[in-house]
Length: 87
Image (cartoon, rainbow, N blue to C red; front, side, top):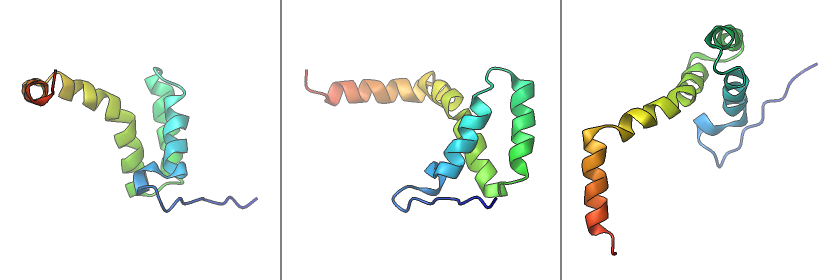
C-alpha cells in the first residue's frame, strides 16, 4: 500500500503533519527513554536527516523553554515588559 504524505503549504516545514506525527509517535512512550530511542531509530529509516532534526528539536522544545524561563536574561526581559505594560 502506497502512503501519501500531505503537505500543508500554509505551515512551516517543521509543523507539517509528517513531522508532528513522528513527534507524537515518540512522545507517546514518554517517559520511557529506552522505548523512545527504539522509536527514533525506527523513524530514521523513513525520515530525512532534516526531518529528524525537526522531530528531535520539537521533542526537546519543552526542556529548552524551561531552561530559557530560568535564565537571568529572561527574568530581565520579563521585568522590562512589566514596566512597559499599563497597569
